[in-house]
Image: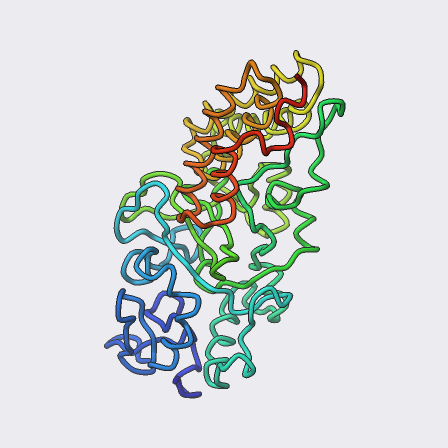
Length: 380
């Protein structure tokens, strides 16, 4: 385990223990020792006990996700400060990072304390690493507020189902599973986790990666939206839907200089995605055939924009599922509904990464048995 003197400073760019974040010994950094590695992957630890404690959250994703210092690195990004750079190429759907939260605002997952078999030295090492986050002069609460990630989105690909056909609008109020699509203020009422390496990933209004919290294994996954070449910065949008994104970014204390904020064409694409998404939600469950047809056309237009901006597999899964929920209302459109449900399943599988994920299982169920969906032939 790390010693108290070794923990006097934390450099997020340095090689560190995957459990306690103690900086490991190198010829340039000093540290707590050369460390040990996972028996099956390059993941590094300062000691055997840290490796053992990490196994419960690492075991499933061992060898299936990238590792710091091997597949990606944290380094200085011109004009931004620290950020994440790919050390190798990543393919679409590849898991760049799998990381447990070191602290949560609720007991959704175990926090780091002595009662979870974490020693006092490891806790101190984690605390020092956490205090290196921005705002640099802030308290730990300030750092959680600025860097915390919502943990409530257990089912990130699943949109809000359309209501019964007699209803004229849709609402997100009954289904918060896709929480990042709701107004950002809602996050204040949800459980949040602090991820010390993931927190170094910078914002881009389009981004080349997406993320979700895997409740079944207790880790945050960072997923490539498309092929990412080596030496490319890895980014994701802090505001998923684009709603009031400039206001949100100002609240976070920085000005974005991505292509969507600099080039009108790409800004229009982000705004169009938001408009189309809202239209699908409003019209998809209407009893009026013309309004539903407009929702279907909006969804198909949205997919074209997704191709253009190289969106996340999560986004594709959600829109194909929206189309299924609308088209499954009538027998005449059942073949097309089945096609979109299969696509939703395949995109969700690519994003989530395994067959037994709750969303993938649910989508597989609708692929095999569309009649089990509440909208099945609800109009005819």
